Image (cartoon, rainbow, N blue to C red; front, side):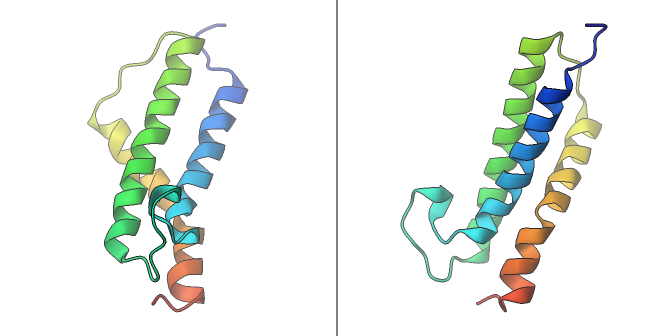
Length: 103
């Protein structure tokens, strides 16, 4: 495959990242299955966002290793991934804190 990752794998990871980045803000349950918190404290939103970012990164790494040879990743990759994930979380953040008025 010329060392290129198929488009479906890239789009799958990006779709999962978009959904996962907004889940903490659109849901009042802890990690989708825990007890309902009204209102859910901001610390839980941040923790969920971090956990979901790690899970999506692991999904991307798993897809990359099954499609072809994984590329080496240094700290720059993870810094950019964190920025991309936070950017994808912006619509949920706006809806939760700016549109609905936070608490």
